[in-house]
Length: 351
Image (cartoon, rainbow, N blue to C red; front, side, top):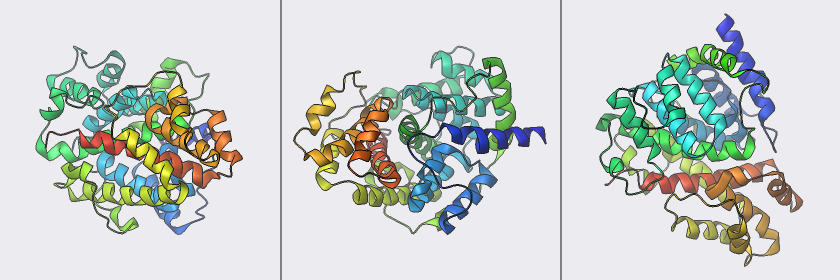
């Protein structure tokens, strides 16, 4: 009873206060599709802002939930293994919100050693070889050509869900950095209490094992992007990623002019996972050839894809000043973040 109360308090009342720039659809069920997604989320996860920030576009919400659910929540892969991938990728992307949440998930699963390994890095000596290898693999997902990516330390059966989890968190981290505060927890709560609180409220969530494929009815089937061909051996993961890809593409086409999309895709084709510096001069140089009315959206898209932590109030307000509403902001960031996730997905296997 106490654990359920803390879980509800954290996800329904505390975490939503950290949402920035937009007002997501409330659990009042304004849309049948939103209502159905929210109902499934409540049973199998929680109404967590990293997913619910997409609710201003119901189809996009359904796509993101489907890909997240089939990769992270369903069997057969060990949930703890996927949580360590989620936490490690989140650290790689400098997303403190997601690092906190998925470290709490590991605590909730009784694996504090893994939660601590996220902080100490892939060389943590206290881990067993299998988990240490998984941490090293996740930490290499921004390093195309790394030997460990072509000789992954896990079984072929587990590949679609572990790679799917990595891809989804390269996407989610970017969306969180744009639209959420840095921590899901009350700022004044001491660290020792954060850990106890987090482990208590996540214990139920991390124990849920969803039935594969139960989210696929939310959206029609769509082709799987070539970058995710490694998902074909798991129809549920394939279905979730393909549905998300279609919903993101439709949202992006509706929100962004073709030449803005082309600009990002051209730069993405050359990207090899490198982190860009603190200066935004590269952004301003890149958008200069565009029409003045398109530069704000292009700036948001490029920063989301390549340096999401640099999206600030000024970037958002510039978009608002040329007419962007919540739907356009979410669609722009989502399309850009997923472009990066697709690019990363293309180099996670040698085949």
